Image 1 (cartoon, each protein chain N blue to C red):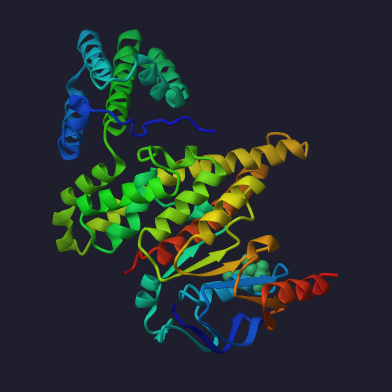
Image 2 (tube, chains in turn purple, blue; image 1 turned 90 degrees about the horizontal axis):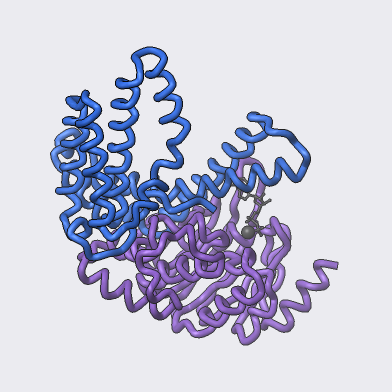
Length: 226
Length: 201
Ligand SMILES: Nc1ncnc2c1ncn2[C@@H]1O[C@H](COP(=O)(O)OP(=O)(O)O)[C@@H](O)[C@H]1O
Ligand SMILES: [Mg+2]
């Protein structure tokens, strides 16, 4: 598993500190992140692939610094956003899955067979030429996921991937995630998704307030919310 | 939501198999030549030729008519304008040419994958490298543009629904402002996603 390391990480937007002094080393296969809205979860997630650079401290993935080696980091770290519509960048299903491969310089023919296999694996076989905007919400999230996973990242960071989905589709996504061989860091409000996770981080007002097994972390999170 | 105007319909017809670059060049050539059409019979022949392309591509004529639907107002306005200013014959010629060109462009996009179109444009733009223009970027812009049309249409629908739900009338400002805000937010998120997916790698 990759090793994620944050050392003395703080982040400010203008005057406002939204993350303060986060130090953590993560090398488990399944890491969850919970916390109230605005507690800094998305900022933390975005720090892991260099989408957000820390105002202080440093973040590394397998020793690669997100600030100076952003490109190498992003090749290892896939990111799945909450809203698949913002993540799907190509007009049709197969084209979107091929996007990341083409950006990495893979030839069209090689990309094609890899794309086909990936689509089948994520329940989108037969949808190659389907316009992305005509997919259902659940299918869109599966497409977003397929498009990220086709590049075989070592770490997958997911920022509330099931928040916009109905229960059935949320469970579908959860099942796919559960079966992934790679390291996953999942930010979520769906606490049952964290069953079987190795470790869960609880954020509150920009601070990492607890780092424990899922049951204990969820219990603490519930007391914070009442 | 929105209909699938101009979006690729898979098939194996002659038109599907023609290289994208050839189709694009032919389309541009016809566009240039269309300025020489000024007799109603010539325009009628052009329209018939383009329409005949639809069954050749395995597409029902109904699909062709669907391509014109979004342009009904523009075509109607153009027709009225020319009838008043230049008379019936001229109106027929102008509207006919316009319709034929739209049908032709749609026929090209209906029978060509976006990636193939984009690749053809990228190849066509290679000479622009001397001007330090990156052809890949142009291609990506086109693909993103196509992808954004239904997304923004969806946002517009949401904004309109919200407006109706709050009992606001059809105020253009109450519509435009939230739509622009949402579109900008979407553009922001899209930029992030492109970075995350390796755009600059
Ligand atoms: N781009 C930004 N500019 C300014 N403030 C931001 C930006 N992104 C997030 N924030 C603020 O930072 C705080 C933490 O946000 P975020 O990390 O998104 O929290 P969470 O994901 O836990 O809801 C929030 O108060 C939010 O308003
Ligand atoms: Mg968030």
